[in-house]
Each structure stands twice: as C-alpha cells, then as structure tokens.
Image (cartoon, rainbow, N blue to C red):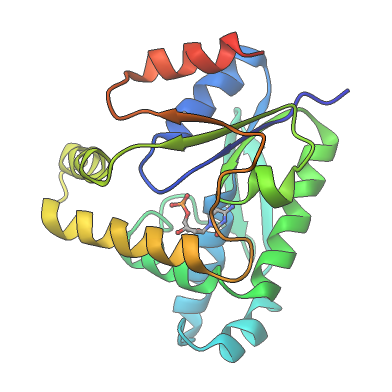
Length: 217
Ligand code: DC
C-alpha cells in the first residue's frame, strides 16, 4: 500500500520546507506541485500571453511541455527541455502562476502529471489541491496554515537572505491577494480536506512541525 502524504495550505505556511524534511526522513520523493504551475506561468509570460485572458491561457497551455526529473534527490522542472528551477522563483511568476492556475485545462494537465508521479513511488506532495483532488486517498493529509503576518515575514527574511531588496507590507498584500485567488477560484480551490489534520505553524519551529507530522505515521 502506498503511503503518500498530501500537504496543502496557503503560500508561506512552510509546506515545502517541511515536506522536504519529512520526505527525507521517510525515504519518500518530494513533489513540489507549485513549481509545475510556476513553470506553466513562466512559459506563458515568455510567450507574451496575457495571463488574465482565460482563452489565451487555455490555448497556450497545450504548447508547454513540462517534465519532472530528479537529480541527486532534487526535483528539476523541465520546461520545453530547459531546467527552470531558478527562473520560476520570482514574484512576477508567483502572481502569474496564481492566475493561470485557475484555468481548468492547465490544472488537468498538471494533475495528470502529479498522479503519474505518485503511482510510481511513495511521495510527500505539497500544493493547494493535493488532499482534495490529486491524491484523495493519501495515507496522511495535512493542512498547513500560519497568519498572514508570519508568512509575509518569512518570505521577507528569505528574500533579504538572498540579497534581494523588498518591502514587508507589499509582500503581505501580495500574499493576501494570492490567498484570495487560490481560495475562491472555481476549479479545485484551496480548502482543507475533511480528513486533513490542520497545523498552524505560526509559533512553531521547523523541527517541531516535522516531528508532529512524523509522529502521526
Ligand atoms: O506553492 P507555490 O507558491 O509555488 O504555488 C504557486 C501558485 O500555483 C499558487 O499561487 C497556486 C498555484 N498552485 C495550485 O493552484 N495548485 C497546486 N497544487 C499548487 C500550486
């Protein structure tokens, strides 16, 4: 029996950091589904597609060839033959991914890819619709949250550590806007699955959250 773990929640709740640690402890593969939506958005931005135009996004989605490879245990997102792991981590791509991911055709393609990966091996997969749509029979489902203030501060600290200039209040506003779009869209909105365990990571350390999840297994 597969022991897949689904981790959903809003941006900055700590999903990917925790998912990577849990995957390593269990010997599972970590699958970052947000990276796939980001690659799709990057493709559209490069093509000059208006990411607010559903019809244009729908048409363009067919031309994006997204593959996932693992190199030394690290997930590499390959967009039309090119590793785009670094170029998908900009605020512009974050906002565009939140917009293009509302389109059904984009989701259908990427959900199929995600389900294929989970069939091959045990995974810890993070995203917005993993427990509700992608892996409804996951062995364990976690819904990870944190206050908008905490999430914005985490993102701010990450950017500062990378030497990027940024504004805390602007980051907070972007997070709130993205949450709203991700939670209110028609296709697979971000919601807690009925059988998911909710963890508010606001006052917790990374180790505490990872320990809490591993103890549930
Ligand atoms: O987790 P992330 O910030 O890398 O995700 C980027 C965007 O992709 C997010 O705003 C919504 C979308 N997304 C989604 O719709 N479904 C997922 N399973 C993962 C991400």
